[in-house]
Amino acid sequence: MDLFNVLNLIGGLSLFLFGMTLMGQALERRAGNRLKALLGRMTTNRFAGLLTGLGVTAIIQSSSATTVMVVGFVNSGLMTLKQSINVIMGANIGTTVTAWILSLAGIESSNFFIRLLKPSSFTPVLALAGIIFYMASKNSKRKDTGLILLGFATLMYGMETMSDAVSVLRSVPSFQQMFLAFTNPVLGVIAGAVLTAIIQSSSASVGILQALASTGAVSYGAAIPIIMGQNIGTCITAMLSSIGTTRNAKRAALVHFSFNLIGAAVWLMVFCLVKAIFAPIFLTQAADMMGIAVFHSMFNILCTLLMLPFSQVLEQMVCRILPDAKVPEKEKELDERLLGSPALALNQCRQVLSNMAELSIRAFRDSAACVLNYDKVIADRIREAENNTDHLEDLISTYLLKLTSRHLGDEESVKATEYLKLIGDYERIADHAVNILESAEEIINKNVEFSDDAVDEYRTICAAVTEILNLSFSAFSEEDIEAARKTEPLEEVIDMLKEDLRTRHFLRLQRGECSVAAGFVWSDLLTNLERVSDHCSNISGCVLDSAGSTMNIHENQRVLKNSDEEYKQEYIFFQHKYRLTS
Image (tube, rainbow, N blue to C red; front, side, top):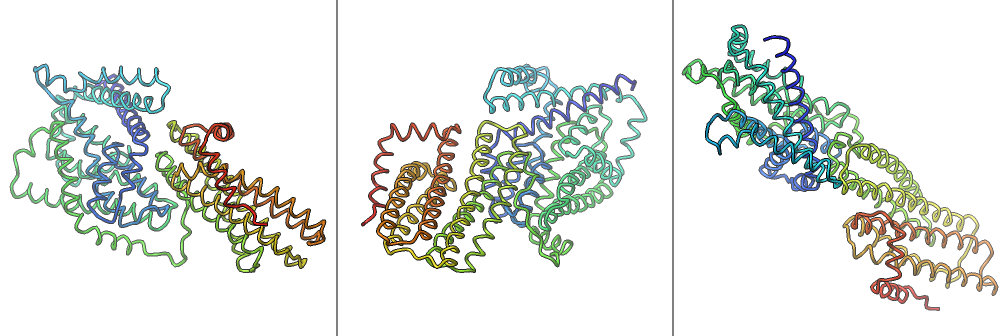
């Protein structure tokens, strides 16, 4: 093997790894919400989790990526350790799909239709289609489809280049002697583990083994232990991703390692016993690409069948190895390990944003109640909630900015923009809650008293603002378009109600029915209540615009006011509902 063969091997390996990475990332983006839906169906049912892990890994072509996602979910509290075990087991089976695709390169036949199955026959067509999709389309989904095809074509060209580069090794005695050494099962397992740990992909290391097997120098006796070792080496990615995570996330990574280590150890012992007692003749035969794919699948399925009944034992074992910390850990709200999967990262953001919204709404309700019935404990809770919303605003906005710096599809980009706008509105609602609380404290400190009419009017506008808060939250949390459309007419009613209440106060002031001090507090209260309703209008506007894949809130609301008969009917309804009685 001369220098040029080595260079071809390096080039082929680089193309192979790049193509696999490119295809996997594009598949992950293209799967988008389907990937989120698959992960969302996870239950405590072990078979549902198993099938979920298998399906997700088959889609994105990487058990390492799936396991890193799982570690991220456990770290964020979106998945339990028990659920993660079944998904990890399924991921090990799903990763074998790649080996079957690569094995098509080993098809040998003069039949025209069988030759069409060889990747070298259809890969050029896929490459052409891929480059057309990628260069001619502005749609992000079509571009990702093009990248999937280009990634696959690059992967297969890399595979062929590697196979051609190592083909000259067929007649090199030292190369054959090297693989004779790997017939020692322990050495084979170590070699497979080390290679996979270096490139951090069992699918890629199996592909490299298939390329080497094309020389005819790799026997099944050497290939099988290497395949077993590859399952151990692929754990390095999840183990690295668990650094700095919560205790349960570390346990999830340890489950992955323990599952693969125990499975490899058990079946290695079985392999050694069979080899020693029966000495099957096929172990001395040259392995081919298809045979390696078969044994890769068989080994992972057997490992899963062996460990699936003991998933609870596996959970207890890792909990003993990594016991609960003496000092309770602070759960991370968002996990950067999911940034590589935009749909899943946005789903995680949505859940944290929903928590932020609930904090803001609760703070408003508490502060509105404090105006008429002040409570020091509730006041402290309102300020704590406001501090928490400030923290969550910084957390989510930083996370979303990191996410938007990556390649996002059109749908993900719109959602990220929507969430960036929503966090500002919910943070300001919490700020207004504190402002209302300060007005309540001013009432106590200055012995301000409202007239009975003012109290009734305050309750009316508070009821209207509470309803608009509930409508806008339903619009966001449940993606309720009907609730979103009701928000804007109610906001206009609240605007007019505020002006009416301000006028009524001036009339009472002229009649000497209230004090000037009460007037200042009254004005502040009305301003903060009206601004809360403005933020609710922004929230529902974002939901409507996101549903229509635009973010031009004010233009869409203007069109809605001027042309929508339903809007006018809702406005009349709310006008009657919150009409003042006196």
